[in-house]
Image (cartoon, rainbow, N blue to C red):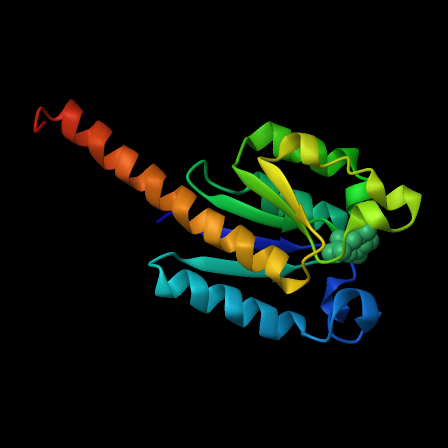
Length: 160
Ligand code: DQA
């Protein structure tokens, strides 16, 4: 069964208490609940995870199946991790990069993402809506993919 994964990077376990003027007051648990129920209401299986360990994040990324979709907030690794970029390039899983804050309107080091080049795109600056919009896109992407798979199988079986 293909899934939509949501991976949160370093320090995002502090969501809700960490610089709430920048990142908001929603906790990670509340956000993950919203994302999971949005997926379930639309027939998608969702799994959310957070880690403060870059190697663990890379293990998770490189264990995904080609049919999965990834919503990724690489947090501070956005600006430092060639390793996460290489992992995403290596597996070629459709990935959307998300940020709660507008990384292009903050300190200059934040405006450079090393990750976007390995992603379908980036959603930044909309608070938790960045994730919800990414989830809406992921749901449609997976639906489209599944209907394409059905068509290909039916054509191969001669039923079309
Ligand atoms: C962040 C932006 C990053 O620059 C920062 O290091 C984070 C969170 C965001 O969601 O706005 O930890 O990815």
